[in-house]
Image (cartoon, rainbow, N blue to C red):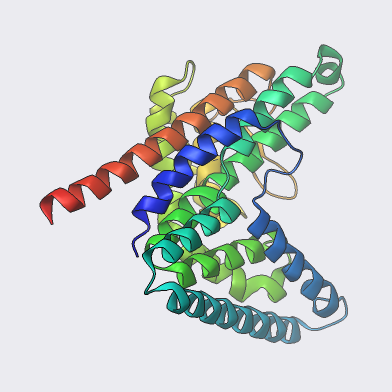
Length: 299
């Protein structure tokens, strides 16, 4: 069973349902929250102060490898159960996409925040902080909860589940040192192509958003993206900062943005980011559909 048909159905459902549903506080997909809860619970028990870096490294490596093996086995087992039934395979892939991918939540959240922030919020700098955090999270999610799971699913449900698990390790442990070193490193390798795709999509979408600049996207991504503590996953963050000419990130991570840009993110930046994310979603779906059609035509 190929991923094309369920993805196209998912795209329509996600676009329609996402546009109708109100914005929610948590923009993470359900499967991401589930895995992050598991990783966080394990880390609280095993990643404790007082242990040497070597011990924490071994513990983290064992946890990452055991859980990775478990989700790979689960993915292959689920696919083996439905491999003979095209309808069940379609349903399985569609359910995964509904649980692991979410872009419209970020779009709606940015729109809602742009409407609720007041001038008093910005005078106290609270508004700038909230807006900057929203944009930073939205940028990271472009690969973690969009291009990553979809591209991984093309390789199979087992790889897709592994991607979501390692993304959860990344979100929980990327600043936790030795304990998360192996899991975060594996995620950086697996997220390389999704992160590059996200940067290219942001660059293309910037051509259609007022005030955005495609050249800044590439310049900031190339010069600043790889220098942050976010690693490869920070490339979309640098791309969005370049597109909107703002500075994102900040403690405990490095600031990322074009030279001379400001960290004082305003309502107009939120509106532009919401539109840019929406265009990224449309572009990716169109390109994915085009690739599917071309494969069938020229096969």
